[in-house]
Length: 78
Image (tube, rainbow, N blue to C red; front, top):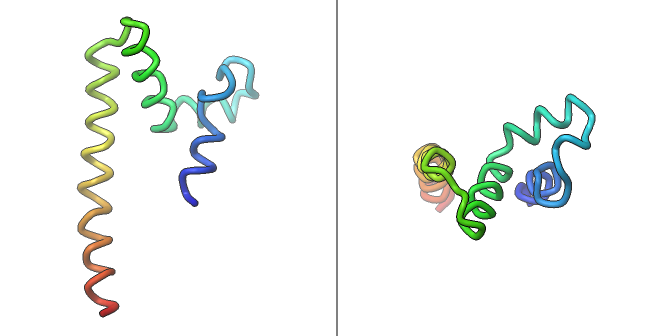
């Protein structure tokens, strides 16, 4: 459920330059946009190490934050 808004507010379907400035700023900061840009770059052969590193770092940070939280909540409800 949480991924749908992030997906629709990313650069998956539309170029960020065509959006209003506030929405464009959000799209540029959206982790899904970074993932899409890196994926497209890998398929096209133009991905940089910085793009790939940013995606991997974002995934590591999100996992480091939410994995312990989810585990704690799962165990406390038993």
